[in-house]
Image (spheres, one colour):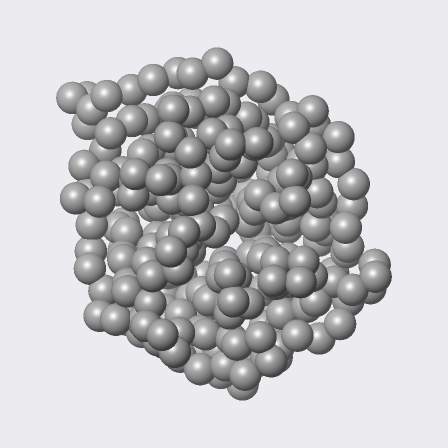
Length: 287
């Protein structure tokens, strides 16, 4: 990939002492993130000041806000979604009877519907190839159904600003998939675009490009709708985990990196960082 454009924009380190941050979301002028190893959710401002929002008796990952502002937190291994209300956790949806495996990332759209990645196997038992992954749809009342199947480890999920496009990163499929969102929340047959080494978190910008963290390539890339890589931000020695666009005009790319490996992560060995860098094209949709 030496022919690809690269860049190294000036950046600011917001937090450098996390364990394993995940699921970055920009909402209400702050960044919201899970720290999976600390089993906590934090909110962070652009100066790096943070506050703990809640702590789970599980591993948190995907986050999202309902139209009324309530935060929804995904618990990976208990397969539940929790609503944060007045500093306490209330059950939002129990997916243990519908999820085929561990659940990981999640995005909540503007109507309060959640799209949840189901990897299709027990993550603690090791990866299983073969397109076992699915996407689960959860409506605001907590009812759930399967809306996509045949995915190779669905990971980061993003929804466009008009609410009609859903993009998911397949970490074991090494690609992005794009779905059309129907009026009832169902997903169309997917379109594949891009080929990468282990894509993880993803977000969208106003031009239709996707920013993607490439865990095994130690870099964030900006991917055009035709799959071409328009920009690369290298993170040498640090795994590129996830990203979102925030700030006053959503022209701040907020990135999560970690010094770890898959094996170390399973043992709780990881150091995680949040950085901010300015970009030319603002973000849209969720996250």
